[in-house]
Length: 285
Ligand code: GLU
Image (cartoon, rainbow, N blue to C red; front, side, top):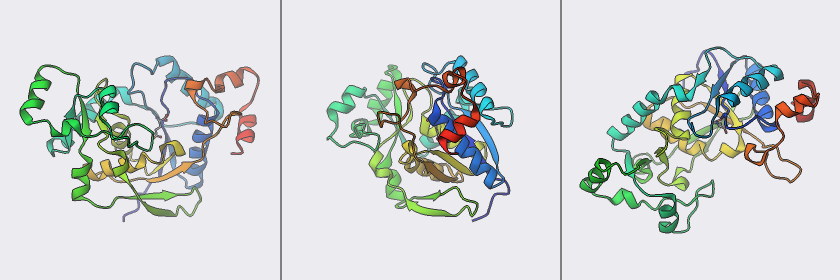
């Protein structure tokens, strides 16, 4: 395997709320590893969910990270400016016959499922629309029925039996260990959503390649999603970065910190007079 000349790390928050200590940990973890390996630190804004992401949260991301002492090259890649890239990638997968249109609602997926759940706890799609005839698909597409596009995982796995993930710990030796992905646990994942012409999985893989990311550092909550990412990299002929998943910070209730639960934001800690040095020492990073 050829070794890329420059190591590039990224921190890729979604601006759908204010950043909290968990984000600070992830950003500083990425910075620490980038420094240890003399790599670059790149920031990316993952705002494909245009209904939940807001410009004021993007501004807050910049402010909070600068306050923490991070810097990054400009321009920052903002996913909502690049829907054409994701559409083109999905079109390539469609032209290989690897995606199929699915018209099911969430309720229909739940009702039709056989009780299996994916690593995120969501019902595994039973494949109802995989069995639609070509004419049936065309009719629904023409009638404008809301459509999402799913990956035909069984077909993918028929052609390629084994996918490996290079997982590393952040130490200067940069030694990665290969582990076997188990993408079958996810079933036919959605690659293009109904409400936006992409999905987290598609955008993240396309952008990591476009930005030349060599090292993906992120929380354990995305550990299992990597199985899907290596499959997509393979299908699109993209280089696979090295992954490192860090532990998640938990609150006093032993639950992971989250924006939706209103975990204390960095902005509110700053307003209380807490310094970046206090944050680093609390996070031990
Ligand atoms: N945008 C994702 C998040 O905020 C992170 C994506 C990734 O690191 O792959 O959870």
